Image (tube, rainbow, N blue to C red; front, side, top):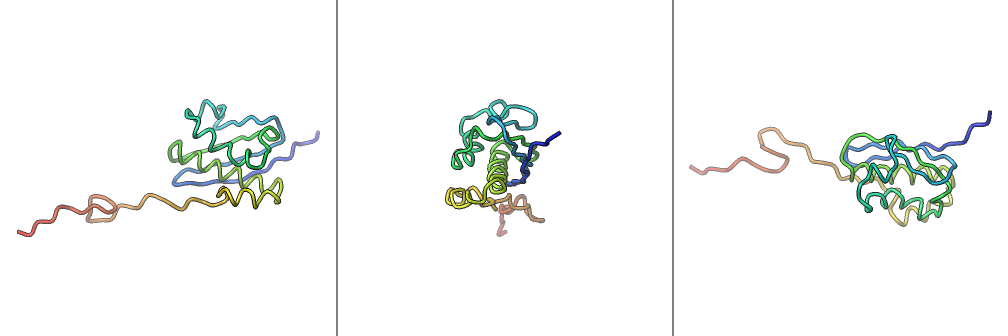
Length: 131
């Protein structure tokens, strides 16, 4: 029994984490057990997760299985995009310059700022009263 080689990678954005598994196949993408078109309602989010495969011109060569948790749909889509890009590097390191130029290998560092004690929010202050 020959096993199909698979490439695993992790992508993160904000509080979302995506575990991506890339296998040789026909180009179907499954997110948390659903087709990507069903999981991501907007075309923009669907295009975001397809972008690394389009840049690499491997759209119909690999099946992608994703398990994602945390965050919202936008954060999850960003995490999946990073995960797919990292998995493609395992497939072929020659793809690195093309993916790097598009910014798909950069982890977006922006996170929600924590609430500080003695304040109602991260930056907001309670109303100041002089007298």
